[in-house]
View 1 (cartoon, rainbow, N blue to C red):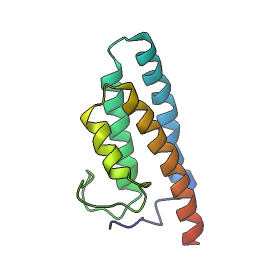
View 2 (view 1 turned 30 degrees about the horizontal axis):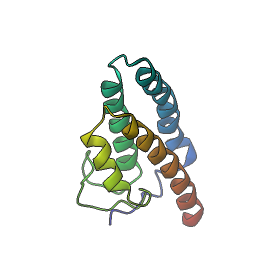
View 3 (view 1 turned 30 degrees about the vertical axis):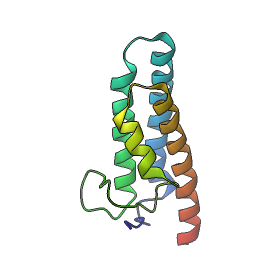
View 4 (view 1 turned 180 degrees about the vertical axis):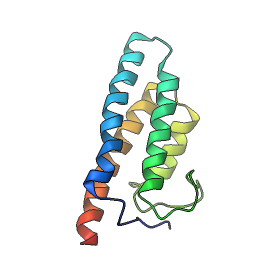
Length: 117
């Protein structure tokens, strides 16, 4: 288990990741709606952003998530869901799943903040 880095989960430090996702999420939604072909590359940016947030909030050694490890900051089945998303970034269902992972991780970080005080 890779534990949370309690110094990194302050709201001020994590909010930029979620704000960036909100903007990117809207672009991905529009790309899917318009079938413009841009959704995959935008999703890859979202996947990278999610991974950066997990690593930042964790006591991890590397700069990339280890898919064989469990991260305390991830929601239930988070790693399995993340692997599904990474395998099919162009699918709309994966966009929805990534959006849910961001929402659930935000809530989990709030609980971990309260728990660490």
